[in-house]
Length: 430
Image 1 (cartoon, rainbow, N blue to C red):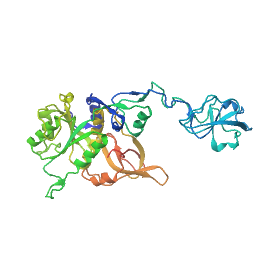
Image 2: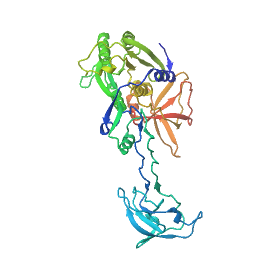
Image 3: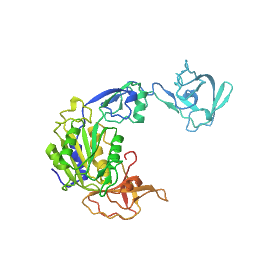
Image 4: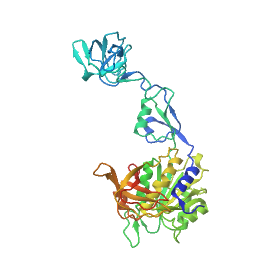
């Protein structure tokens, strides 16, 4: 068991240990939105299927243009017809002829150039091209320039977002192979946890982690098994772990990982499986228990039965700290990429944007720190970032204010006002 790992060490361990589930299914395209591709998709057609016009205008042969870098004479051509999108013009353009053409229409034989309609002069059945400014081959979208037949269009592990989903539709694909949706069980732990609707009592807090973590799980596209809150009783926790492991591919909990007298998660992980690590050089979120539950002896009346192909697989367990911000940051930094890997998705590495810090920050080397922050344009147009203020791990309101995290590396020291710091934008993750 590793203790006080640096964040990069823990991330590397998880990248090495977590492997994708093998199960997949084939779904109709409308049902595949947001899912993870189980294999590469090869384009069955050229996209576009024909040379076509990029705009409304007139098609003609570029050879009709005067030679030279800046021709000074105009060219007049005879208009012989019209081509619409989906209604090709049947014929071949001859020398001295032009065709009225709409965006997306097939380029006819004998033409290779489009002049925009706003640049020409039309008189009766003739069109006069402007002097200069139209190079041969202009404004034509070539057959296969987006995708050639036989080219990989979408890669295994890609999430079918709006663009990918639309691309699959443009290829005429009625079904897609996708990874089985990952099942993740979640429960909060602690005698101090109140569920919504319960009256307040001294020392107790309402269960915010259940809502923040479940929401972030839903954003990943997993199937969430919400098991609510479990008190700090070893037998109740043991039952919850084994029941969840009987059906889920992964378990995420919050609370009970610090090592205090009432913190039982780590001990139960060792009893029911194994612990990979549980303490990190991380702020906020030093206690983070990661391991596997290998004993799936119990079934749960709360859960539907799992497919038998996964019954013998260990269930990953991620025990988040109980403080709300620590739980969210730990999830984003370590659990989210591990679950992406488990579900067969291409792991989306954080995109750090160098941003000027508006004030000094004190930082001791020896741990990675994630500071809640607000990034916005400064008066000169450059990006500037400031923290939200106090950075206590229980200050959930600061996560509401934040649109980003300042990420200070393990070996980094103090930050001076005006220094560039890496900023991780939170949009789409929380």
